[in-house]
Amino acid sequence: MPNPYVLEPHWANWMLVLEMFVAGVAAGTFFLIALMNFTAARGAVGAEDREVAARMGFIPLPLMLLVGLLLIVDLGEPGRFLNIIFRSPDAAERGPSPLMFNGNSPMAWGTYVITVFGALTLIPFLDALLHTGRIRRAKDGLPRLIEAAAHNPVGMVVCALFALAVGTYSGILLNVTSQNVWGDTILLGAMYMVFSALSGAAVAAIVADRFKFPRTAAAVRQLLVWFAAIAGILVLILVINLAIVGRALPLVADLDQLVAPVFWLGVVGLAILYPLLTLWRGGPIRVKRGGGTTAVVAGYDLGRLAFVGAGVLLGVLAFRYVLLYSALAAIQ
Amino acid sequence: MTVNAKGMFVDTTVCTGCKACQVACKQWNEIEPGSGPIGMTNEKAVREHTAFTGDSYDNTGHLNAYDWRHVKFIEQIGPDKGTSDRTGARWLMMSDSCKHCEQAGCLEVCPTGALYRTQFGSVDIHQDVCIGCRYCVGACPFGVIEFNKNTGRVNKCILCQDRLEQGMSTACAKACPTSSLTYGKVDDLKLMAAERVRTLHARGQTDAYIYGWDLGNKGTITAGPNKGAAVRDMEVVGGLNVFYLLMDKPEVYNLPANPSLPQRNFAPSAGVALISAAVLGVTGLAAFRRRRMADAAAATE
Image 1 (spheres, rainbow over the protein chains, first blue to last red):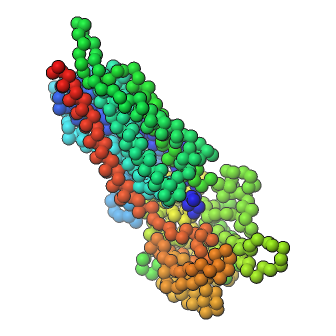
Image 2: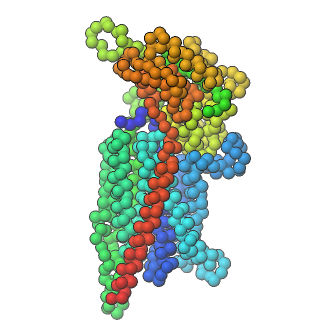
Image 3: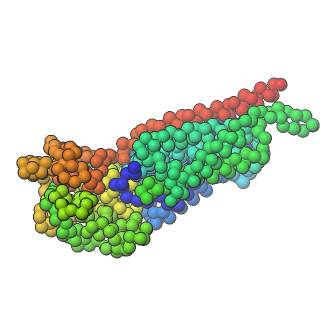
């Protein structure tokens, strides 16, 4: 039985579906970049990873700018957004600081995390410009600084943590409401994070496939399988959780808002089963090298991975839709 | 609890459903009429609470951005079996509004400080500070605060803050002809409510109990579908500064029996996310390490 006391969930709209999807992809992509740079820094075999990470570096910054645009359009007035960060003179009740921060509100946490993350996305973007020759390399000055920031292991760990925080923020936001489905579980933060990481792996898969990096593709294939498996476990626990509190039907059987078809085809089919079934098998393969020799490397048979990555991205978009609209489906 | 908090005691046993409170609220606060009633066949209008409800004399249906006060009509007539016996019938009425909770979910989640606790213990809204993020709408466990599409901000009962600052009572309480709505200090109102419940119990109306504070009353419902069920006073979300004397289960009045703050999920949700972050980090490192080891093994062949 749905909770009949709450009003219509206004967040169930396409603008926020897109915003959460784009932010999740940006966060997931940055997580993968940080992961690749972190592991690549420890050995020469990660050279391919660094190449892929550099190419992926072009992605997070524009996506975060798009996120800001979508949020502003959703709020209606650009200036309003500032009231979350800077204390309005009329909101003096919460203290004397010029900055606004309500620690009880996940939205307040999220705003600061997104702001810092948005600034951090400059690092891989500039690194990508440097790596592709759009900024000239130098032994000192800005280019040196960019390289140091982009490949510093500690810095990469910090970036990865911020990326995961952005990935999870929207889920915790939904958890801390009284709405049907959203407030009936504590799993959404974790699920948003995992699906965000899954989308990052999907982007890495497309880039590795498109630019022909079989060694990176091998690791990304493994990541897609493992992340999809984790996502599958969480989805299963969520359905059981919602069934126990009597709110599973809006998720798995709603036809009015098309939540059920999108859930089964998009989330279960594309985001979870597609990578699991197509990528489960796949160990080291032989790749022909110059001089007619055949070398055995831990690569992956390219050509199919990009399709799986695109499918997973569609599945992650479906996940955002399903979670947001299930609350609306519950009250109708 | 806020020291010397002001609030209202709503005695539903004397409410006649005249809607004078609704009118006074609209008039004093100069609330726009909304888009006006439309037919029940218009699904969008039904969802937005602008349709004719078709529910007895109730024409507003639910609290929303344009109706900060709402009189509920609950008819407990039962099936007509062709007899004239209507002795078990009763008509419950209740004037509902924001409860100005001691632990207010809306206030807790507001990221801008637009929602704030006043010197009277009520929860008010700075319209200039509200950014229209609608987080409070989703957070309120009672479905009280609502987004105003005309202004892009949220609205709800503000306990006539401007009147209180001038030492006046709320407009609705002032207009109530039967004293179903009584404004005053919450401590005084609780004493009044306890006395009223005792009086009703002494008269045989053992259904009476308090929703909002636990004043120690217990009773049994004497009529309607829930006849015979036990009821007792209940303190919800830390106490309600606008609280109710009810004659049936809370659900009958469209009030949640066990409302909870959405913040209860904050720490657990963040905790599960932290565990997930650790799992993702480890699997991420493992995937690249596994590939590198396989690569190194292949290179030595």
